[in-house]
Image (cartoon, rainbow, N blue to C red; front, side):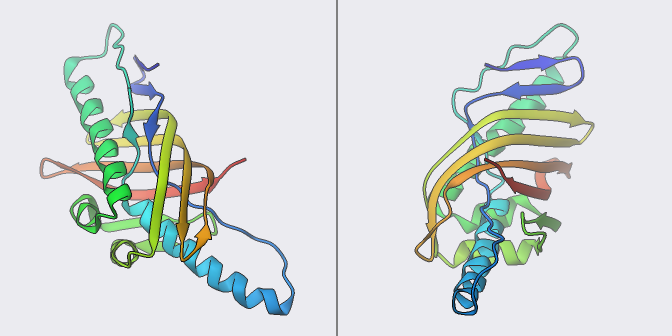
Length: 194
């Protein structure tokens, strides 16, 4: 279930998002070329994952505790709803959602350490080479700091990029900032887990 704590933290389960799969293995020269192509595809995949602002709420319940005001509860609901919309956009390969929700100064860091920008992320989404079969996000936590919300979660993703399977478990952090009355993602980082 979910809870709101005095530390301005929301804990939720059964929310949904995307993540990124990376590989770092030594390969023979013949397989090295293929590995580089796959790694480039994975970077592209990460760009798409990061653009999604992605984890949506599936049956997220809010159980406010005393001391958590209604304004903060509403902000948390807004962030959880943005995460839900991001998941839906990912499944539909909707690049316009990323265009609207990523800040101009957006930066993502892949599990391989590559830095990607808003334009790179949107281009990756528009390529149409990425297909998601499913996304399941759990252990979502939303922390509020004024006009900033930090979301952390686990994500189990199934899908293919250029015919390569990128399915697996991830943990991610996404930072939302409210600018001119609307929420935008300014930063994203994903890590492959076991």
